[in-house]
Length: 255
Image 1 (cartoon, helix red, strand yellow):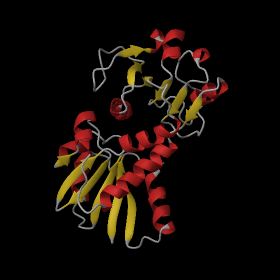
Image 2 (tube, one colour):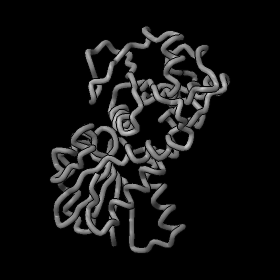
Image 3 (spheres, one colour):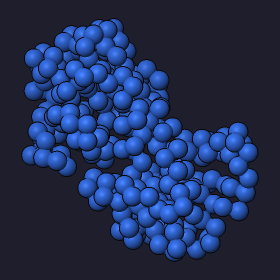
Image 4 (cartoon, helix red, strand yellow):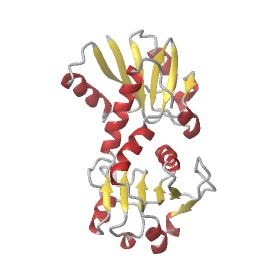
């Protein structure tokens, strides 16, 4: 039986196992299994591959960076943003990918307009790096916004400013605002990034990588001002589908 799975710790609320189990049932995909592997240490990683049926893994917190050391062939994206969330075994070597960039780009595009040429990325973690990659590809200029005072957390040396620097003028100019932080995620649903929401309008597009709740306070306040809004659920589905494409390609694809 072909084996796939997810590594991370903990994995009490895994999206991936439910997604793939349902996919296999709906599409009558036989002899395939997807399991959670909650490993407490990255040192348990090698032992997983002793199963000859294991063909691929998804990777989540806290191992997206740590697994890169075990990958024989990291993609260009993985090497640049220093995050790997998909691994494929091919001829006993491991190929590493980042499917977040694919999921984010494909989910962002449907509501993106030509006027969305300047963006703010709220947060400077690994998810922000994936967003940076996509904005660079789409030729959208951007700044990162951080709660911490740091010189530069951008993988492309983009400006990093603090939340207390945000004002009406900055929000008005930056019509695409992407929240990559966990602010507003369940159970802290009454929280939102500290931006001047009064400056938002119908020209704005607010994207929140959080998908639980479906409408965060960040998105709800944007909608009140007439902004287009999008949560991270489509991104999650799309990155999972991309993992499946990678695992089933005739040879490991380039990224």
